[in-house]
Image 1 (tube, helix red, strand yellow):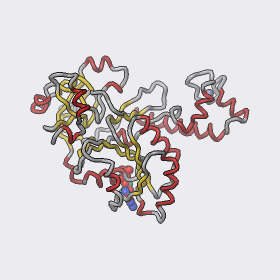
Image 2 (cartoon, helix red, strand yellow):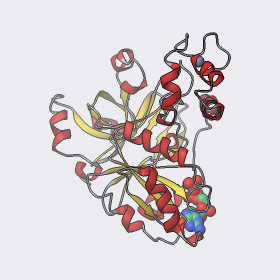
Image 3 (cartoon, helix red, strand yellow):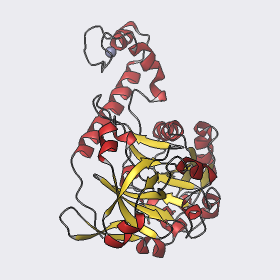
Image 4 (cartoon, protein in one colour):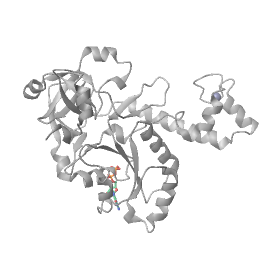
Amino acid sequence: MELADLGWDDGWAAALAAHPGLTAARVAVEHRGAVEVLDPSGSFWAEPTGKMFFDAGDKRALPAVGDWIAVADADVARTTGSRAPLRAVLPRRSCLVRRAAGEREAPQPIAANVDVAFIVTSANQDLNLRRLERYLFAVRDGGAAPVVAINKADLVDDPGALRARVVAVAGDAPVLTVSARRGDGIDGIAGFLGRGRTAVVIGSSGVGKSTLVNALAGQELQATQAIRGDDDKGRHTTTRRELLVLPHGGVLIDTPGMRELQLWSADDDPTFDDIAAIAAHCRFADCRHRREPDCAVEAAVKAGTLAPERLASYHKLADELDARAQRERTPRPKRRR
Ligand code: GDP
Ligand code: ZN
């Protein structure tokens, strides 16, 4: 393997030149306080320096899956199992950020340096165009190019009609109908990949993301990409590598954060631009438009200039985001295989 197989190019080499004496590696798994990284010789652990933690205004300054990092003593870390000092995160070209709903919630990077995001929907489920718009917005906002994959096309008679409805909201994003299970259309998806490209797969649970990842990566490859490491208590654990190098070239990032993603907040959502414009006149900047004093949004509903259903669907999204943020604050059990 070469660095280029992991997505390295001249631009990254130029960025690394600012850090003489250090070598490059790409973050494959993020843990609290440390990362598992890959370079052409294999995997090892790296740990941001105290200064990096200290200087970080929020988590965006710390390494995320997909980041290119500059480290010292990679080979020492590899052979002894120690953590290589991670001196710098090379400036990102794109970053998908999870924004939680609560005002105090800090933004959290979940995948860096992603070129393309496959937004997967399922042909046999109710098509939620609003949700799709939110995904499209979040991906573009993070600096990546969205591609919509309508999966399970084998289950419907007329995937073309469905595709037309998606095309209507997709803007410049290509829209493909596929069957991950049968392998139909996978070549079209793979066309957006290739050596030097990095992709993520996002979408609601059950739409077929794992099946698509397996179709792209091959079952065997996924199974062999587990990493052995030590957890905090010194036990051996295996984690699933969240950055896969595909057999036909390209890198696929598949993190739990990506999957359970909540990339946006109700206020960032362009779907609610009308409400955001009125909310600028609320007395409180963080007004939730739920009986706060001098709420301009509720006043607009009363005056008949804003449909009550608009505010109701805004509240519904806000509640959904709050509930998800709540769940995410409860620690997940450690993943093992
Ligand atoms: P995920 O939660 O998005 O990762 O979804 P999975 O990949 O686990 O798939 C959910 C279910 O949908 C599984 O039972 C899959 O076998 C099934 N599935 C995935 N892709 C297809 C497809 O193209 N056609 C059909 N008929 N079923 C599929
Ligand atoms: Zn208000």
